[in-house]
Amino acid sequence: MEQPDTDYLNGLKNADPQTVEILYQTFRKPVARAVEAAGGSHADGNTFFRVAVIQTAMLAEKGEIAEETPIFDFIKNLAVAHFRDWAAEKQLELPEPPPLLEGETTVLIPNESDRLEIRQFVRAKRQWLRLDEKCRANILNQAENALLSLDPDPRFSTDETNACLTKYRQALGITTEASEDSLPAPIVTALTNEPFNRIWNTAESLESRLSLGQSVKKEPESKTTRNILIGMALFTLAYAAWAFLTAPKSVKEIYKENYNPPVSIMADRAERAARDSVDVSLPEPCEALLEAADQYYQQKNWSETAGILANMIGDDSEVCKSDALFYLGVVALQMEEPYITIECLAKISDLERFGEDLYWYQALAYVKIATENPMRRSTARKAVERARSNTELPERRAQAEKMLKDLED
Image (cartoon, rainbow, N blue to C red; front, top):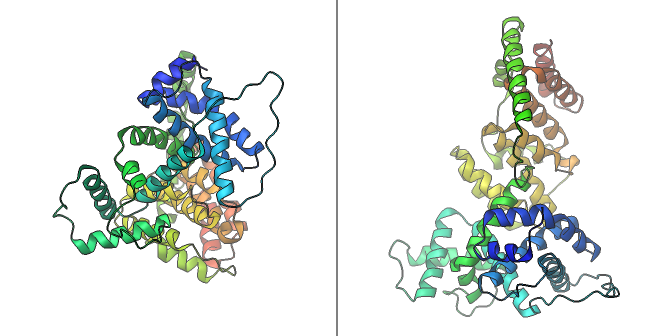
């Protein structure tokens, strides 16, 4: 439900999560459509909506937006302007903007220079998050030192600092040789500015939910819904008890016997590439991020692994995005979140590379769901049947056939 524009402004001043949630619920889709109408993709629409919200919040915090400003029009026009700026940088051809309708007025938005600065902030923050944990701490320390004119922190050696700075500057595409030991002003601001980081964190929380297929905000349950759910839960418990006593083998046993997650992300990727006729190489920054995620994966640190992979989903490279979604789905199973696994795998369009493995992990996710809800046993069986019919690996086919037999009602 929309709020008065003054309420939006007051909430954005402090990056109030509830206000930003309402903005996402109310404005995200129409703003994204406006960007698409300007020549962008659906992903472009979502990306530049977020950039526009961040800039609007920072302007609101500084009191630089008039109270009578229509916030929807402001964010929409700002998002479209950011997209057009970005397209011009990429030398993309776009259709001419439509003329103003009769009676329509132009909403004043920040100029091109100010818009560029915000995109630099966003890019600096995004690339910083893709560094390993130690380099993130090192770069943040460098930014704070630059802001406050502090002496170097003895925790970080000169060699470590230089290596991290080089890696970060390369990720940002900074190729000038001047001031190799320093950070440009937009980067310092992106890492240390409190209003920017406050709205970034609020938006990041919402974007993370959306990237995993979840809604921006859960709707409150009515008493009727709650009573129905309680009744369903009681029925499910009764059915589960009956299934436990009558089933030849429990679904939990079947899942445990058949779920053999990869030992390593990079080793699994290499194994799939060896049997794949399609030779696909990842961009170097993406390869580095997968390796960083793999380090946490091998340590069974699922939350850190998922964090790196989730940040990769916004990458411009479809190949990188597909790998991130696939392994995020695998990690979600480790975190016992099978519904997230299904959502992630469903977003991968590259069936030539992932088809067989997609069906297999989808099947395992449905079996995992059936471990908690025996009423989904037949659905799990159908998923395993689909995985069997889409595999060319003899050992996997045999495994699927055994699962089907075990899952018989």
